[in-house]
Amino acid sequence: MNIECVICKTLLTPSDNVCNTSCGHIFHFPCLVQWLKRSETCPQCQERTTEQSIFRILFNIPNNDSIIEDPASLQCKIDNLNSQVKLKDSTINNLAEDKQKLKKQATDLRHEVQRVETEISGKNDAIYALQDQVNFYKQQCSDASNLSKENEELKQKLEHLKNIQRIMD
Image 1 (tube, one colour):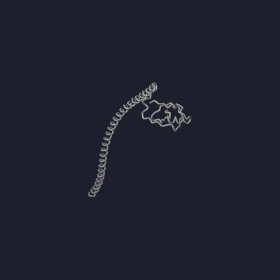
Image 2: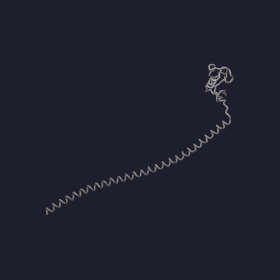
Image 3: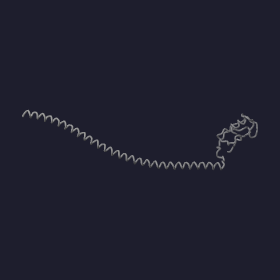
Image 4: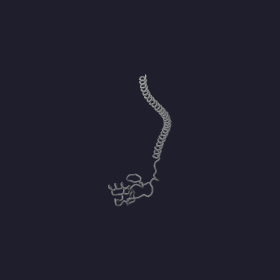
C-alpha cells in the first residue's frame, strides 16, 4: 500500500491518524484540518468539505511491505552497515587482544602470588624457629638467674660457716 498525503507529500502508514473526505480522498488528519482552516474545499478535487464531513480511517494491513526505496539510498544504508560491521569487528579484535593480555597478566600474577606465599611460609618457619630459640634462651637465662641466686645463698652460707669455723678454732 503506497498512499501519499497530497498536502504534506509523505506516505500514509497504518499508525498515522488518517481520514477521508466525503468525496473519498485520503489525507493525514492534522494536514486536512489545517487545510480546511484556509479553504473549505477538498485539496484534490476542490469539492466543498467541512470538518464535520471528514471521517477517520483505520488500516488493518501493514504498510511497509510495498514501500519501494531507491537503489542509491539502499546502497548508502548497506555502506553504513558495512562500516558499522567493520568497526564492530575491529572493536572485537581489540577486545580479544586485550583479553589475551589480561589472561597472561593474570597467570603471571598467580605465579607471583604463589612465589610470595612460599616465601612468606619460609619466613614464618624462620620466625617460629627464632621464637623457639628465644624461649630456649629465656629459659637458660632464668636458670642462670636461679643458679646465680643459689650461688649467692651458698656464698653467704659459706661465709657463715667460715665464721663458725673461726669461732671454733
